[in-house]
Image (cartoon, rainbow, N blue to C red):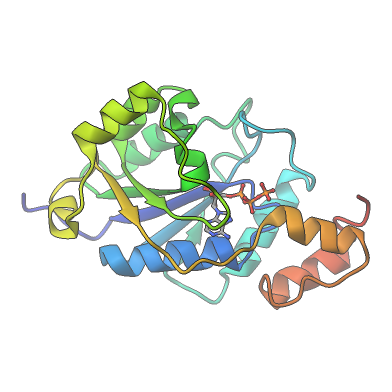
Length: 218
Ligand code: ATP
């Protein structure tokens, strides 16, 4: 298929509470592997699958913007933060697909999230709207997949980047990335204990956290 590559996009959604080098390195490695120009980071407003984030949405959006301010290939979308109600990924992808009807969309999710992917709202439709790029993450055992997800994986798994790039959506692709054992949870707990998370996240994000007094209490 002869598609314009201009609007192709690697997408990472998350609470980014706060954003850290684990997130940034993962999407950068996927971006390079897939030869895609643009990455879009989408902070969740009200994540449906987990308890409320610690920092308010405007702070998480600001930290995400600060983290990539000097990297023109990275954009940040506020569409989930400004939407009422829970941030369902399928709604986000529907709106992106309307804006970029022919683009290749590649949504990155960690292996931990993939193991529960069949609990996401309209998860089968998500696979019609985007490719799913599953990245390995340290510390998560390769657990048994639920039956419906195993069947979908059987139908949609793709191991060939050239083949993946010929479709705009629909494949599940596994990408091994540099294992950075960083989590927002560990950063929050360092801060709450009065220790520094420096070098686990961009300095400018840490400056913002300190200036705003975020994550001070356990
Ligand atoms: P928390 O510790 O609060 O659960 P987190 O660090 O896992 O947060 P999220 O915002 O929940 O961050 O993650 C968004 C996405 O980034 C998820 O798909 C998750 O799997 C992935 N991710 C998070 N940390 C890493 C990491 N160190 N390496 C690769 N991917 C990561």
